[in-house]
Image (cartoon, rainbow, N blue to C red; front, side):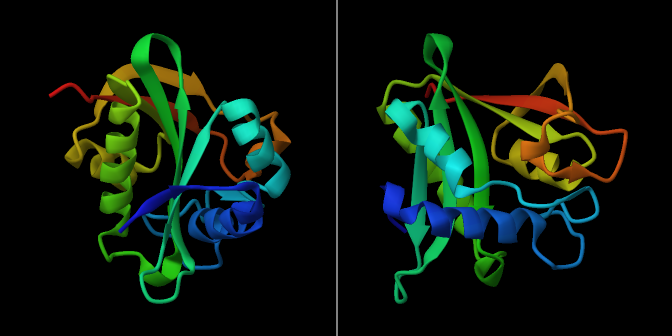
Length: 174
């Protein structure tokens, strides 16, 4: 699998992929936010804002034979060599194929090669199986809990009132 930096021409497809992966019509399971949040996870405008002036980098993976977008992940450089990882998404058609793990490894390599010494992520507290998946990949809970942005219409419509964001981090130093 080869990761490429998404270009503006890719953003409609990236938004479609992310919305299907996070909020698609599938039954609730550990890979989705179905039953937790309704509405789109992102849109082209939000993605354009993310990559504007190089603030964030969106990496995309395409299917080998089809060339169709199969996955993506966003990276944002922060202070002191820490980078924020978000929007890890795998097309529902190829979930459980190991692509998520490969995307994570590729994102870690990209960030490390760009000077990052650690990655930070935020995961919705009730997504316990997803938190466990990140922990199996070397992330650890930091103990920092952030309030869920209930007043931000850009995150969709929360269906529960008990959501928070759990922060996890991973050292990229060998």
